[in-house]
Length: 305
Length: 331
Image 1: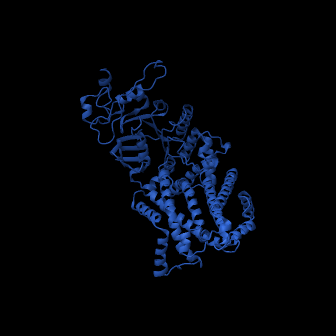
Image 2: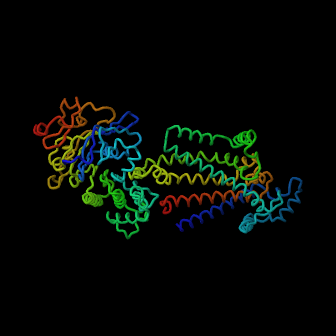
Image 3: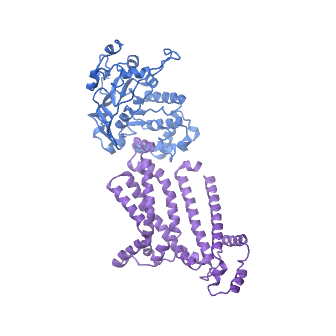
């Protein structure tokens, strides 16, 4: 198990390094950092002077290694647009996004997995059809429209929740519902397919033959096997939601990473963009590594191969 | 045999809902088994032998319908039990061993976990004593307790070991009836003999009543007290093993026996018998004897009515319009 973890961590590091390299290369190809930093009124001389002053004239690999070294020390540079250290910006925005991401992930899993299980236990019944409709609804509905509908209904007509902002827990409820609803369908449908598959397997027949209670058969014997592919998909969904949702953050005026990404792209703010992309990819890497570890715990066969 | 039989099945019908209509997997099947007796159900694939077993255990697939006049095991009338009452019996009073040891254990749980949960469920044992008893049982089925097998997962065991685990697990709660559905078919020949020996030994030792399903007549001769031969969902012949193997009275049983080489009798290079043709479709009703289409002795009357299972002089039951004298002496 320890060897599995070490190998998995090594792989995650390697992927993170590649992503950082790629991000750096792409941003420096598409945007001239000096031009972006100097602003629209700058003369050619100003830009050239800035280029030398900021070290943008050095070869790309030197600048990358320089950047990597600072990043490893927690220094993402200074945002030319905000005029603040990027790390401060990130630390400022992170709690909102992480709270929203965690709540939305929990919401999606808590609704999606039981719906999928129930749909699989009673296939082709009313319950199954209803949960399928929920899935289609969740998948098809646009985030901005759903956000607005929830605001109109639950914040304006019946003012139960705040319209926007980040004052306290209650302001996270509507954004959580919107963001989480998007992740329910894949989780629910994969749980249903997995459960249906597992429920017709030989070892489930054995479990029934042992006279186990339905609860033990469904939850101990079937779900553990069926949930393995769900974990992988839920991890991707979680990474997506932890990376911030620009639409949801914008509609509910939550100043999270999603908004920061949007603002930095608008202003060609390279240091901030680099940091945001790196953090986004780290969430992906982290969650997929986490899902591998969870699955290795759930299914002993994964630990070996 | 003077006492009431331990297992009593009468008029068992099992239909499967299939795309083409209703498939009659088991038709009007009736048999009794005395306490401690071994009944072998033999037949080719699709003859309904596995379905009979699953039907008795209440483990039929969801597209199956079961009906019967009587379905008794011990003092329990299985037809009147609800799901929960049935679950209390399964694994406790009646247990089943399956054909596929490779896939019949849950890959996510250790051997110890899967064994002990039976004891915790049925005997209300604590986890620790359950694990201790599980270890004893592994020893009993020939798995030395030293190897830390309880902490191993199914994928770490060979097919033979898994089947031993399965046997131990299913016998742990001392059931009175064990249904073994081709438990050795998926194993290597050498392992087959070991597992058969183990199962037969434990069955005798514990006085368990056993239904053993197989297509292997060699196995039948070694373990069965009585044999029921199934064809196209019906029992076509049933009686004492020795009598059936020595003197088959149904043309299908006879054909089946001719397919098997007899040591010392069949000369090398000699042709073994085959039964020409295929099993009739089980969808829809039979109009006559199910075997008529393949039977070398079939007469006009065989296609007109389904022969009844009649009791003959030696207590054997045969589903054929003719007696062996009329059949084989003419040939």
